[in-house]
Amino acid sequence: MEIGLGNLPALPGSLTQLSWANLLMMAVGGLLIYLAIAKEYEPVLLIPIGMGAILANIPGAGMGVDLRAVMSGQPTEGIFYTLYRAGIETELFPLLLFIGIGAMTDFSPLLSNPRMVLLGAAGQFGIFLVLLLALATGLFNMSEAASIGIIGAIDGPTSIFVASELAPHLIAPIAVAAYTYMSLVPIIQPPIMRALTTKRERTVRMPYVERPVSRLARILFPIVVTLLTGLIAPKASPLIGFLMFGNLLRESGVVDRLAKSASNEIANVTTIFLGITIGATMVGDSFVNITTLVILVLGILAFALDTVAGVLFGKLLYLLTHGHFNPLIGAAGISAFPMAARVVNKVGLEEDYDNFLLMHAMGANAAGQVASVVAGGILLALVAA
Image 1 (cartoon, one colour):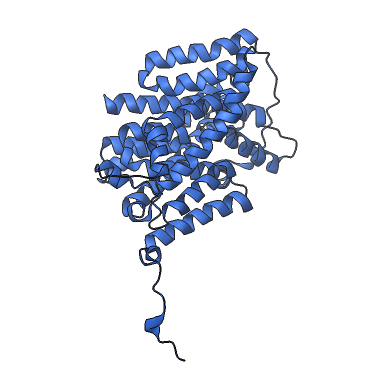
Image 2 (cartoon, one colour):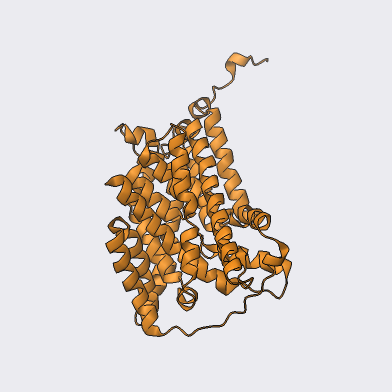
């Protein structure tokens, strides 16, 4: 008995609704998971984001967070939208994550070598230049341009916090760019570092002379930084306050249980929810457009310019110290802690296997962590005013 085509069962409704944009974002989600597992590029970030992107693009599942619909007031439902409202709209997830980051960060290398603050400041140059470039395209207003510029900090929580205040409809591409580029620090930075420095500069040895940092100084540091930053850039108070609160838990030495919870359980749970929710905003029909592409390009340009500015400032210090400062350390002046510091040390070792730059780079990297938060606060103060 022959079976005609008309007797074949119809395709499930979800398959008929599957668009090329959905398929593309599923593929992107799969790529992120591949990079996390096969290449070990920040797996704690890319695996949740990649899985969220896959789930968000299953038609009829109701798991995607379509930010265009959210911004236009259209009814939205689903577990990820609940997480989005609870953790991103309220800015809770970035702030909780900052407590954990503060509890994990040792600012002693910065305190023992305060001049690294200059490299942290130089490492934020790309943020403000890309803000101007974004405005020059004519595609973005000031609030959107500021949100795009902050991608250059390579600091996911700060990028989400600023974007949720100034341009909530752009959170998806901004957060994805910030976290993806953070995971690609070992790929993006070394070519720039090598192109801007000579072999002689890369082989400069900087013996680490450990200057003792008193317990009192380590305890006062988060309190003083919070007060100074709050007075200079009040809009940065939530970010710097939560970061320094976490560090105070660490340095106080009397609340080990809280410090461990902040750097482990709280940070890990928040990272899971934040990552998978950000992935859920990558809904194909609203994510795949020219605006997203421009944001991704401007974001990587901001990152590259931050690295360029840091290395060039390092070269200036090389000249001022008559060749006793290794310019590679300038690349660590961004917020990707401690990845950027490890990359600097790795590039230095490739040129001279006895040249250990890690502790110097950690100081610059810690300065970049604080500087990126201050830069975000300045943008909020200038644009939201």
